[in-house]
Image (cartoon, rainbow, N blue to C red; front, side, top):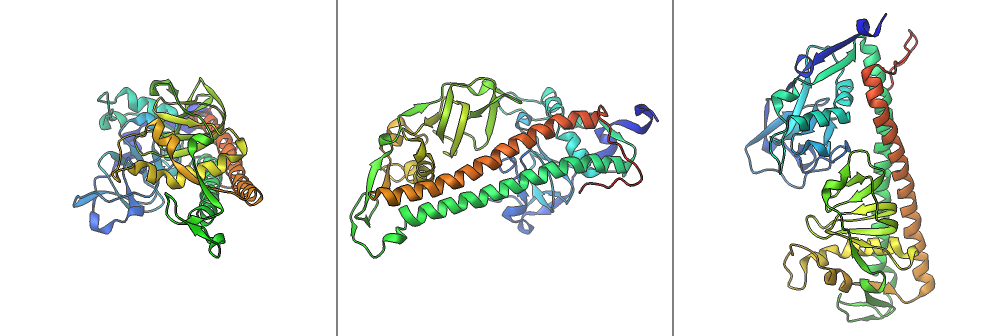
Length: 389
């Protein structure tokens, strides 16, 4: 049987529709409310919402629905729901209909870069472009008529995504472990409770702890690039003031670095290798590479103190001087300090290993998507073939 005979091409509206059902806000929790703010860029799913809107209702979504952020489609925010809940009006909720197409197959079809490019072509607005809902429903969808083949193809990508998800969960646990170790030694000072404490800028600290400014550990640099150098499939990491990491085809840095957003949500990240940075992002490259994990968790913990500033009110942006003068606790006992440094580094090396594996898996997924979804590569099925869950 030829490709044309056993595959079908339709418009999205022929196999799916937008949800128009509403749900009361009082029935929602932070974990099942989805807005563009807690959807993650580059097809990385969702985070828990920070707050619920002050509205009476939200658009209802159900398990196996496809949620897509309709603001700035180039961020590629898409999620296949595993529960039910509500969303903001700027999130499109797509539900399959007619039983012609498998929900998860449609999710992966819409996860292709081509779909987000199509959304941008019909988008309205310049500063904050929004996709055109009627135009989106005209997007062409290709799929095998055989439901078994649809499920098998979707299962291949589900397997890759499950491994990525497991790595992300493992990294979250690892980072929480490192944060707990840091807090125990350098915030709560639990191992020193029986020793002598002295007054300091941070309150009472053990007498074998001293405070040093960040400028003692690195020179504070800033990125020089504008956001428009970002590309979909660039070779190098590009750090802006947003939580996520973007890509670019140029780089100015090749080192182990801590990246601190100078405005916006003031997040902190770390990276090893070639990368580029946005002009309002501080690039902190430790003079001693072995200290990078310790310094990262120090900045991560004391960032709130930095943001509040000297007057105790939230600041709009961080200056170079603020970053340089932030003081952190250091252990005077070198052997004990080196032991903690090694423990934190070992945890971050495991995190880095998982992140590298995820990058490889995502490249494989994104390269296979257009080939399997177009029929360029066919899945050989026989009566004994099993669906991949």
